[in-house]
Image (cartoon, rainbow, N blue to C red; front, side, top):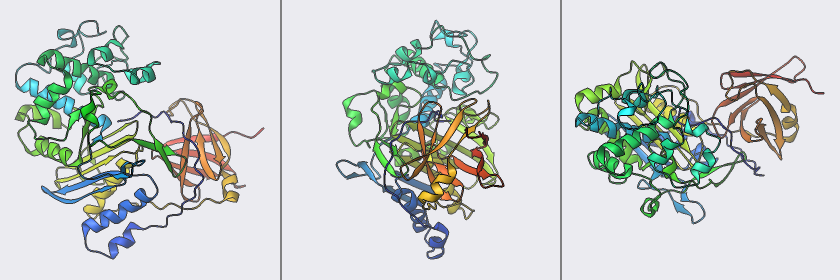
Length: 459
């Protein structure tokens, strides 16, 4: 959740970096939790896989916050704890909160149907506000539309975004299941907020949520000039070690589902307000935090074996940015990771820092070298099944200069970071990639996340 697995095009970068780094060794040298977190983060920062702000809070006290890297690499302006970041799908927390504030005010009911607010939506007489909030509406995903790239290049409103899916058939019966992140549902919630309040969505969320929770540095990006003040510029991976500017988009094209910007400090205040404050009534708060449904109200909710208790978490990715928030109510632990690099390393970072802070096991980043002779032993084409992210995809492992990359059917590339013999990380999506070899030493299977691709014989 929080991003679509659609590999982006990246160019090669002819620099080889070797990082031999052990966070556990650094921890042994110091008793300071803050120093241990900083030591853990250095390998991500030095290898170009994190730039942003990290905040850790335990039992109401901030035990670590530090900013890394550049808000503007071209002008060498550094990120600070006051830098504002786009948070992509984490934005849904604030859309949901605005709706629930209107529920508390008696303006909306969770059982209201879409047709009560917006005509012309297929199944609008069946889809409830609750279905939208819990991403069980069955609406077609605007992000999957063939013209979505064009949508991102123009100023949008909630009404224009909803118009993109009007009249299109539902994917499933409303309320029956969660299929994937429903960007369209949160576009529609933004329009419902506008129609209920009579205000533009950005102004409505500011009044209903940001002011009420004292989030002075937060807002909804509606493409206005004021949103550029104090904002980090977004970057994306280029090859295995490089970075380049991310493509520009109109953030209004993500209204409701990914258009919020904030700071780590504001996000921490928001989590406090939601879990421990009075921003919502007890009834609405209980609906948001209810763990009987794994997804809803802008959160994932689960019993986490690693942390031996309930975990609330959310991640997001949008061009140039990535974000992650984790809250563990049993230990009252909060971790926030905001980055202006388009990489899903933020979730791995967040989970590991929580584990480190609680004295639990974690795996530090340990990047190794990949020489030319070894590089040649990885080449091949692999066939995945129908359940893969791209159904029945044939994926190539190829050399691009001195770097190893996956080439997807679309022609896009994913650079692979070498972590050990036959063990890599997909830099863009931060998924583990493992090579299994046959008795002759040739690659037989490519394991990507939980999926297995079988080597095709060379002709």
